Image (cartoon, rainbow, N blue to C red; front, side):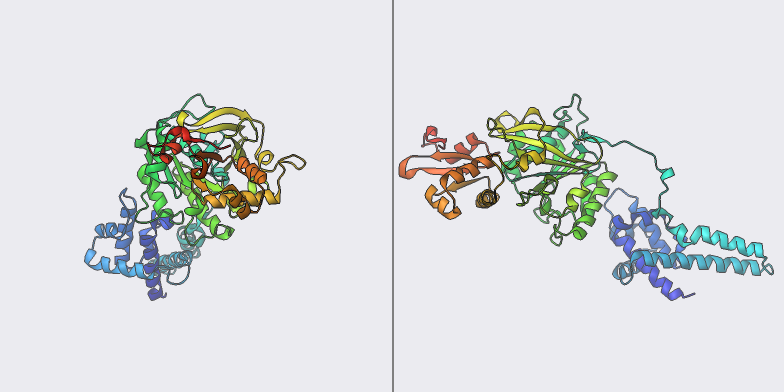
Length: 494
């Protein structure tokens, strides 16, 4: 046997287990200490198992605290960490370790048998059978296979039936300014208090919600909007990103949040801000592993995860594929909600939430609501028969049929906002020249987006502001006007 190579293999195995417990936790729990030859390595593995089973933060220092022979094993532990992932993948090293243990077992049993005389055929077969059952590659990797006869059928658990399942990923998409943030905060508020969601008759126990946003300030935007919804602020958390940003690629940190807070709901707004700097959201081979790991964590901790996304500029696509990025993103989600402007001209601030995808149950009815901060943020108005494709892709032959020129103008207007809630409009003539459109076309595009317009002042001193649909006009007007300016001078645009 090549004991020297096995010794290096043991170092690599232990280095991986000590450094990446979340990735190899199953090995930590199911491997046997007698797989290791070196006494220091056995000591280290026992310490890793003890540290892993603690509720405190798992790290090298905690492992060292459980070492029986720290003066010798501690130095070896750090050497193990240095050679982790040195060459071939972990599974290959694990296979070598198991095979070496199998050979040692057969060798030791043969030596014991020979000391008693010539072994019989039955005895040799018995040794081989025990070795295969205990140490064979198949036995070591049985954990990779699950027989369906051993799987107990269960029903999905719902946060909001049938729109948001627990333990799964839900996608919420919309154009900018439609009301994604308000609806997301409504969900967090209901979870924090245990109040029922729209359409439900009974609630649930108050639970923790985590809301991560890369677009809005917590103190000046998120909390003020939540205050009108009367949540239990003791149950709503934000991960502090002042020192280091949060990334879904760092699933170890995501899992730690779940362990610490046990949230029933986690919201990431928007998804693209949390995928990680090295992840191209348009590449399925990069997006799928990240979201797959997060989906596994959601199921492990029974946490409903909602990813907020903007729509792409490809207005002719089916509603299911209007979200930015790879098509694998809606594919990973078990439910998908699409928010779109209500086409009813009598509901200029109306929004319809359409249940575009439902992998675990029936599709829910489309729900109508309006953004009204002064009335609690989100005011529901019943159900609608309209689907996402009905709203986003208006059939040709209608007055509002999709137009490449109109779509381009809408994109240009959204670019003017650049993610902000409002913009100051220059002289209308200058704006039309800049956007290369007529005044009537500009007004139609503005109205299609649901943008609000207000004036400040008169004559040469008049200023025009455009506000996103979810901006509260009264609050904005108060900020806009100093006390010396009469509030009646702030009025709705013609």
